[in-house]
Image 1: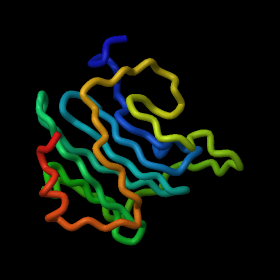
Image 2: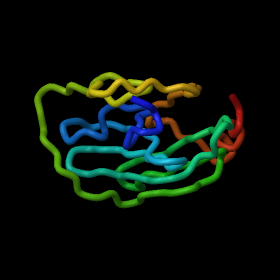
Image 3: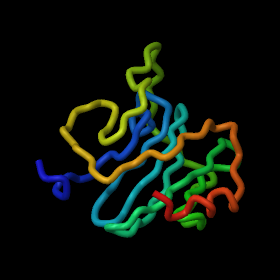
Image 4: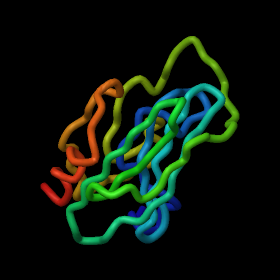
Amino acid sequence: MVYDQLPHHYIISTGGQSEQSNGIYLRKNCGTEHEIGVGIDASLWKALFHLPVNSWTHVALTFSQSTGLKVYVDGQLVTSDLSGSERFYVKTDFNQFANIVVGQSNDLSLDQSSSGVAVWKLTHADTAHSKADLAAHAGKK
């Protein structure tokens, strides 16, 4: 299957796109549109944004249930979802999406190779970064 013909392509996922898991996902939709989502139980925070092509881009997000989801591209706030929305959620005793996966969704249902993705740093949710921190890493490979 050709990458550009897919309805969407996961870049990184911990299962937040699934109604059976809590987590986060980043995926490329059509063209330059990208989507970041955070799913926690019956709530989903989701933000759409565009990224330039053929260019290294720094993408960062901040999230808490009380302040919502904020997405930064090259150090600039580009979009947010402060309140989230309700989603269909099925609580299970076993989290089948416990691993972080780069290049495809956690259900591994499609062969979706990803090129040009580099994970620079994953930071624990309790670590706060200032706008200056985010701007300092903008455009770095």
